[in-house]
Length: 105
Image (cartoon, rainbow, N blue to C red):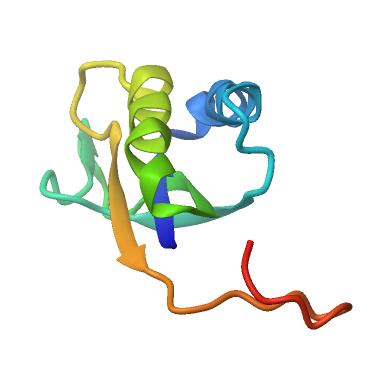
């Protein structure tokens, strides 16, 4: 299993979530976050915004589904401008359902 974490633009949130659901990945967690990437914030006139709002979407999928999830997120989140976001993939050793004790997704 792999955990996919995607930091995307807030205005792309709904489009990405609906695309993941339509592709067969309905389980996810999303939350608003703030951060900065290589551009180190945003300069608007004399005002410098050090951290920009993003949406963090997290989901855990089977290893063979990772590339499809990445492609879905990239297709819907990309604008072609700096600040589109970043996707991180991490291994997941196990998943447990609290209510039933079931192991796995």
